[in-house]
Image (tube, rainbow, N blue to C red):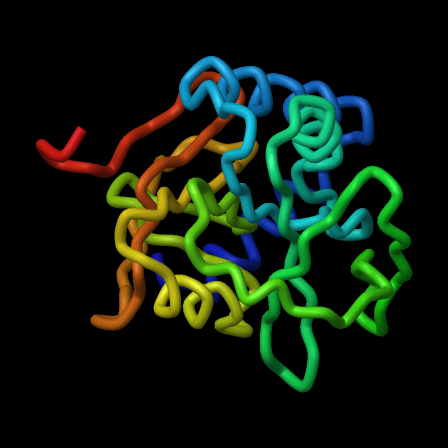
Amino acid sequence: MLKAELRKKYMHKRKALSRDEAFLLSEKIFQNFIAYFDPQEAQKIHIFVPIEKFNEIDTQIFIQYFLEHNIRVFVPKIIADKLINIEVFSDTVFETNSWGILEPVSNEDSGEANFDYVITPLLYCDGKGNRVGYGKGFYDGLFQSMSPKVKKIGVNYFDPDEYIDDVWENDIPLDYLATPTEVLSFFIGLE
């Protein structure tokens, strides 16, 4: 299927989930992430803050765990159509931006690009790690600025059952996908 079709299909499937279903699936995704990756103190993790109206994975569960375990947490903020990385702490103040996304009040870019993990929002991911996002290209830009050693991890309620037919040659695939049932690796012979 084409990205536009997949975007529409999986946005609809996601919105059809009840709040309780979404939370339970988010919990399972979180548990699979922790069991597979076992993040450690002082590691650096970039993670998105969920857009509630889009019924995104509840990454607040992840963020709370990371902060409680002294794992450094960075979240995205869009300034002048550019994604910057802001380090957050338990007392960081957030506000809702014009797109309805919670962002830190601070505009201070951490300058960090050497993350251990980037937990990536998406609507769909196929069996090769190709991602369908919201079509703005913010994470493509982030991926291009990072070391190839950074683990790019998608999180999704749904398994990769169909392929994306219009993958662009400059699309950067994910390394892993965490779902409610498993963590898939897209590395071939590199683990």
